[in-house]
Length: 125
Image 1 (cartoon, rainbow, N blue to C red):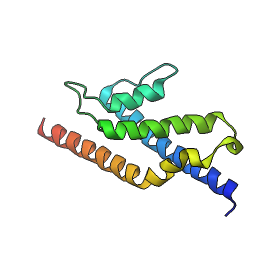
Image 2: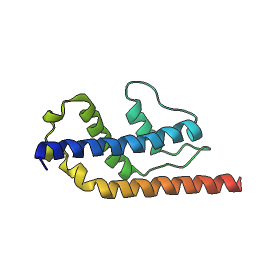
Image 3: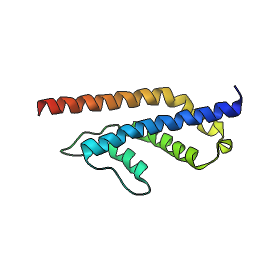
């Protein structure tokens, strides 16, 4: 595959991954927390919101390690949306591509565990 096309495909997959995770976080924020962050930096506020416990409402959705990892994908998604594809340098985001399978698996595990825990709390309430 042409390196330029491969670079852009990888960038698109990384951005899509973060947007999918963020969509789940938005649903949790609206349906469970009752509050979706506002303002210019709402994306970062939402990610942070998912990493903290809301007393009397819910446990953290993700741990601090995953928060830091997802923060890198958020920054990259922002970059991809605000520059031209030809300006991307693969070597600057290659680590995100390499880490994606592990980060995605961890995100799936932590979100699933959170939802299972919330289901159990609801059933025992």
